[in-house]
Length: 448
Ligand code: NDP
Image: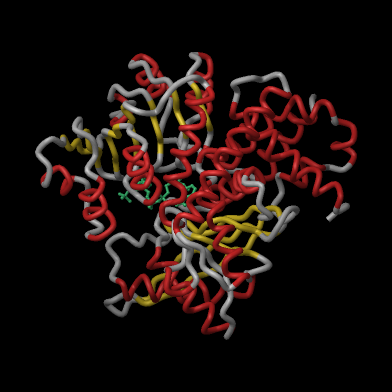
């Protein structure tokens, strides 16, 4: 059996009932075959892959808090410090009822390669809780965040592990988490990113993942002789990534016509009204049905089981920006039948492996989340730099660095794919380019 297959079996055996983690490992290892096989003896002797798929540290903790009725609630907390070969652990916190250890491990594993691709000195980690901020009062969210940080503070620090936001963790949650860290540690340091602008946040961090996704999509189209101007785009999600992807797509002259949340989706053939979308999702924290109620050109569809929502709409480009495994083989077939030319992942692992293969077989340009959504963490690293310098850069400065980083990522994954004989396979290119740097650093640092 090849070393890659041995290690995959090892992961399945050692991590039972964690299908998303198995899926993320499979996707990476499969595309690394060519590199691993060329160095098999050395990697095997050093157990490099076994070390790579095993987190350096996993922290599991209890989060008790009191709700508005005086009832004590208990949630589970997680922080997976996956790999620090190239820098302090860096990766978001997710608050969503679906969160479990397997999901956090899948996200932490992906983060290692994504962070490496940015070219910045950040290792991979991820964390979160099965707490659901939806429908909770501000006081309840604060009580939860304070309790979460009362345990987490002892494991993180500006040079150790720097968490950020993810699904369910936005500016409000980061503020409460930062406040509690500072209170316990009595230290004002850049221990979290995604902070508010009045207390160490970076301009353009809020926009970064969505904007970065479009900078990369633009570079991808250009390299393949196309122009983003005038293209119709289907977007899923209506959160941080989706909103700013839609905004930047419009600024680049494209027309995004869909968005979705966990209860339904919108088709707006006139193009999504970003100001209205922000009002509904960011200010009122309401359902998308309110968007349709306020805009006559928009259709609202309740999400039904078995219905494939935004991916049934005819588009040139698809940008999945909601959550994992939201675009399956049936969706991929519908998109290809409707003539899609490019798919770039704003979310983490939104496309199932068979759907990815279907796109690749049908010559659809496909860039996975590790490369396509790396703008968020890259800008988080820029926030860390500003915190260390105790300086603030302008929006334009950060945005132009972000654009440069995304164009560079595209150039690197494109050339890694070519170098290893897989031209146009940007998934392989991203995994290879991300892996090589981490592997080199791990080897140099000995058996740790
Ligand atoms: P948000 O919480 O801001 O938004 C998530 C959006 O997806 C919401 O519209 C939400 O609907 C919808 N959604 C979440 N879970 C589900 C589900 N199970 N089924 C259907 N819809 C769902 O998160 P972000 O925009 O920050 O993150 C989106 C994706 O991008 C995630 O995969 C995240 O890991 C990834 N990502 C985020 C980065 C960032 O900087 N924010 C960086 C890199 C990747 P509703 O409004 O109903 O909750």
